Length: 563
Image (cartoon, rainbow, N blue to C red; front, top):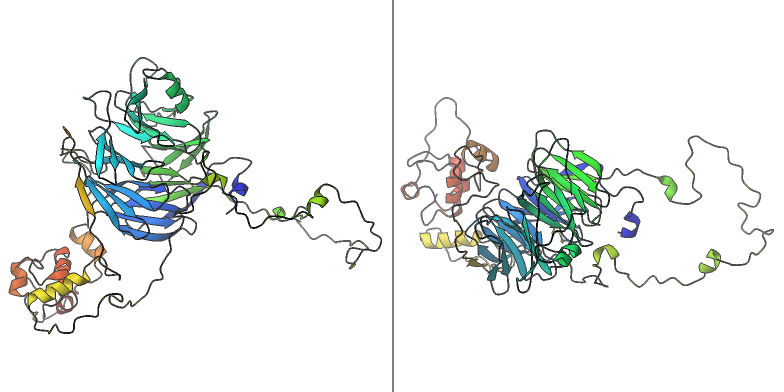
């Protein structure tokens, strides 16, 4: 991919819809890696779906959480992925293997996660109703960042472009700039409206290039500041925003805002509908409004790091917005002309001669002389778009793509493990059956050694309420809230969707069915020692009551070891 040829001379922002990415389950959040080659999507069933963005195919699926994934962030080298779910769990994942490195349990829901831009050992976490927390992954320690007002703990936070400073904002419009290493206050200012009234800070986002950052506030205005001016003003400064972006006609509140890859454009997603507003940062003019399907609500927006492409999420589907590609065949050769109709061609007298005898030898000057120079085709120059301004070389250990293994229809049972133990007789006790069933249900059933269980660390935060509900799930104490049930859907809908087998109704005389074994029915269908995987499936099927009937095919296929 030659990124130098991607620089368009006209607009550098998307114009139209360019398809969708369907993760099967409902998508809630998405984020690109540093090069834009992979897109991670967090879903409401706890899975993380990683898309290869060049082929638009699924490269990997990580069964990360039980509850919906609410925030994701890539590490700088692309090898790690940190995720948060609505049950207050923060996990770090190895992208290549899909293994969980470690987990952290917080007392309140997580609103945002962010890796340190230069140090993958540090993660910034923003819990609800709590001061932001700086996690150190290697020793599982945490530091609670200082806040301006202890009574106002609705705080958002973000690293700056290189991670030297952490910017925090509260519900009273106060922005604090803290040194990342010692958490000391470096600068501060207050965001005010036209009068002296303050407005709540909803989010802080930094551009990938340059020193600009934006602040999304509750007064429906996006303010763009220069980070160098903030540091120059110091504590209690009064910096003026470079731009104020808003929808004056509809007074649209903004759900999610971010910069383009080159930092020249700003996109904001409406909180009322699936609509994306794009402004030019330098002038502040609105250049494009992208409208999605009517009636849908926007959940997340991400701009591709190096291309004019935007990914947005609504109704559980990832929509892709890109430029309209027009084929131009005249670009292949400078003397190539497109013809509307056939033209009779008149050839020159010497055009098809092997050697033109009449041609005189011109002197080699300028471009002709340059053709004789040797061209270096072995040295690989670093791609400028992938390097920061303080870097000369690319990261050789970076993970740009994921290898995809071929799908085998009938894989061997545990090909790398020990041969199955033939000494177990059909009449063996329940312990041996349960043990064999447990072997099949190990997460390493794909082959290879058993995975090491991730270490879970509980983060204790003083004075933080433990009964908070994540905004994705609903409002606390509201009986009419649209709270989604975590995990698999219950009832007939979930049954029809998740299970392909349905017992067929019989007409006429019903044949006699065998009764459920007493041990199985007394333990709640699968709660006993020998139920194993079959018991789990029966319980998910709707937890049949004691003494109910089980059809013969269902019993044969799903209740292993109970015949």
